[in-house]
Image 1 (cartoon, rainbow, N blue to C red):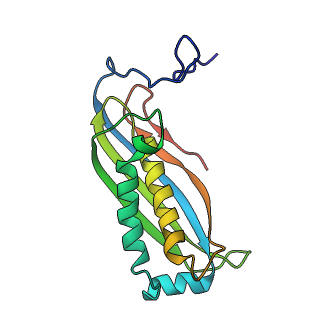
Image 2: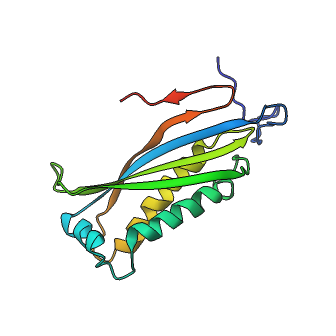
Length: 164
């Protein structure tokens, strides 16, 4: 049976002690999708959203979100991030619901005693929320889906790659 590492002997929440863990290079990549109307995607592509360059702002917001992960997720350790990279892939072909999408992929890196999975997933989430915030005046029906860890490497648990 798996032991819950975020509880102390009294059953209260605690931050896991990583003091004895070795510092290793750690990389995590997460992904998520933002769905919108074709008209909204076209406005993003043409720079016609009143608040500005949506993807440029979402990229900066995602980086900032990753850097603030321990402020948002109570048991996350502060991690010295050595790199955050965020990519966007636009899907202009509407799906069966008539929605286009933007796929957000974020990769976080560090050399340390604990992983950066939460930082990568937070980067994707904050970038998605920023796209919504910047476009809500033209499309309140924007939604998010499939925010998940694609892969991680480093540390005692080794490498993980999501299987489709």
